[in-house]
Length: 90
Image (tube, rainbow, N blue to C red; front, side, top):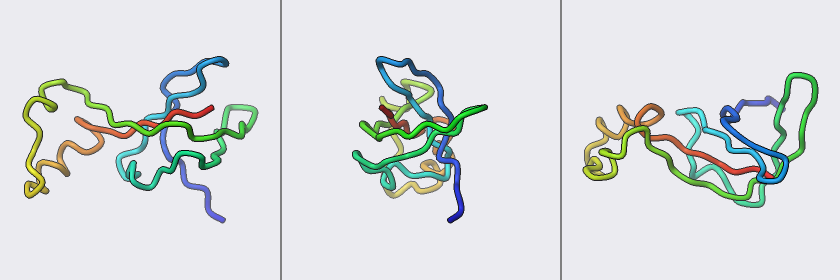
């Protein structure tokens, strides 16, 4: 089985869990709450449960004027830089 990194841990704590920003080629539609994932640390691996999926944006103006569904070019331009997926792990 080939292991593919899903993203990068951007913050976390023992009590609140981990927040992971998904890589641009990973869709939030692939993520399912209740899925078990492994987080690779520097020295250890951690077995985690996916508890939440969300979307993030680097600029709030994108939310005020999002690209239309038909504008696939703008959606592709924004994906991964202007907009991104996030998951919460426990």
